[in-house]
Image (cartoon, rainbow, N blue to C red; front, side, top):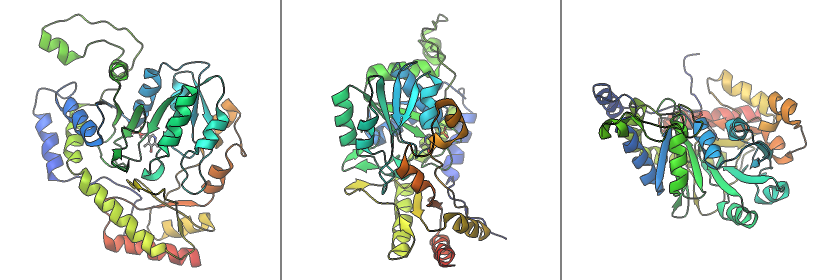
Length: 374
Ligand SMILES: *Cc1c(COP(=O)(O)O)cnc(C)c1O
């Protein structure tokens, strides 16, 4: 078979190559000026006061859990319909993830289910803007405020999404982003935490740099050698090479989003009135379409037929609580989150990225309708 259409991929052009080459010729490959430039570009786009760049979306989640001061004995409510890192980040700091089910139509964290999982140990809720659609953050915030919980958005699917004029990045106390190549903006590996809170910003910066209270360039500029390690942090820094690529990509984000939305409209029309059921959409929001997820009958057979046709469909996700690690370490099992478990048997992610041509989207839709009929 000659052609392979992946479910997601980066879009890199000559501007991006130039931006990276420029950094490679400069004095700073890491800890330099490209990092704050990228942070300002992302925070500015999203309307957040602070952006802290880190080495991955997973590092961003870990840093958020650290910044909140969570640890052993603390519970963090998370949805199961997500990448494992959303829950793993609690475990990294010794806290316990507690799974609350999702809405059966949108697969977004269900506020009523969150309320049902709150105990005296609950300290935080991490919502996931699954597929690129913002959660019901107003309902989640009301619950968080009533119970004194911190609200974190895993926005790794949702850079550029919003609720009315409010962008993802301003809807929770902290929002985490990923710049993996399948996400909206690529830096290879990379991530960021957005927040309006200067104290959280300070703690996030400590955490990504070994818990050291000044950064190398600050010391160099001040002509000083002295530094102190005041917390146990990690080396979660993003390089200037990656940050320059990210800043160059940010300039194209509006075009990337427009193309993703156009592909989504095309699929919506193609599947209207068929046995292929796109996920439910909440009214009045701007979807960022990291993923285009449909539910189909006989999913495993349809998956194989699509792969055989050269189409890299995926399943996002196996519910996190059903992974062997969680089953054996936390004792989680089927029945804990029925809506997520039922969805996981039917969902399929179709190719969705800015470089997907109309012809390829047409091919994907045709093959899917054939596979579902066949
Ligand atoms: C991609 C992703 C992550 C992790 O990001 P990495 O950059 O791959 O570490 C976390 N959560 C969700 C929902 C993601 O999609």
